[in-house]
Image (cartoon, rainbow, N blue to C red; front, top):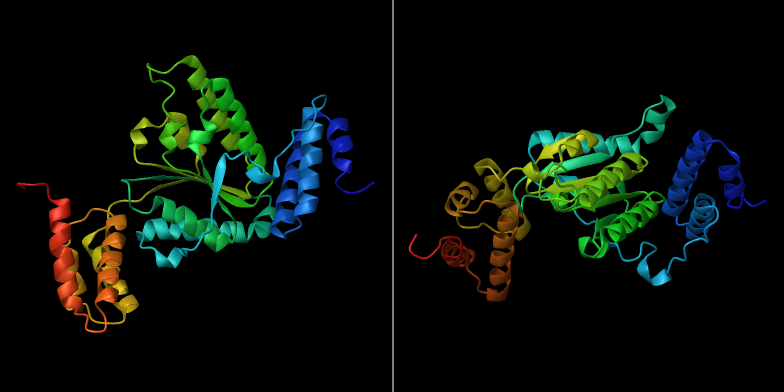
Length: 325
């Protein structure tokens, strides 16, 4: 009997504990085969596992055009490395350790240990939460799947629960980074008196699904409003990292890097630029440098980078300062 066809009989024959072990093993095998681009075998394993789990139900038909997840996710091709983004030493160290544990998980498993794979990022918008998730995926050389809330959250809460189940069933058989942006949208406080009992059950189901994910799925969640998160959320995550607004030293380092990228002197010191540009996020820093670079390129061959920067600083001052300030 082919390897994939053994799944139904093995899962159905065992006890409940055996079934759970078989499911976890098959999910891991499918993820490994998919990582080797053996997609036909991986799909066959998933199909047989679904058949075994549904027992009397017919296997779910997965449409080829929806990526296998029903349009509940979209994939970002990771391009940013960990060293390309500016992080606090604490966050950089924690992210590096997570990546190392994932890359060397076979060693950990030989000692009966699993790598950490659940991360909660908090902090103001525009300070690198999505970028850090992308960098983790790039370092691990796995896909980055981003949850599409507009597709997950249905008109009826029962639909939301069903879609969440399908989403998690899909990612369990992939080595990937699963990213929940604005996680407070789903992981809100269950004690909120304005929420119904059904919403609270959806939150409970979501947390249990995250708990049960295998360690080859790295779950990264991000929130701008940590105070809205359910208290149980904090216990679900092995890494709790805060990404604050850029410090003056980080702004200086940013402009030092930009000068190297541009290949010419900026006409002002990196420290002076960091002091004069009044922004409060890495996203704004990146946009400012792209703005300068764009105008400088269009002014060549007689471009004056100092004049370009002075003009952009004046424009950005008007942008971030309300009239009459």
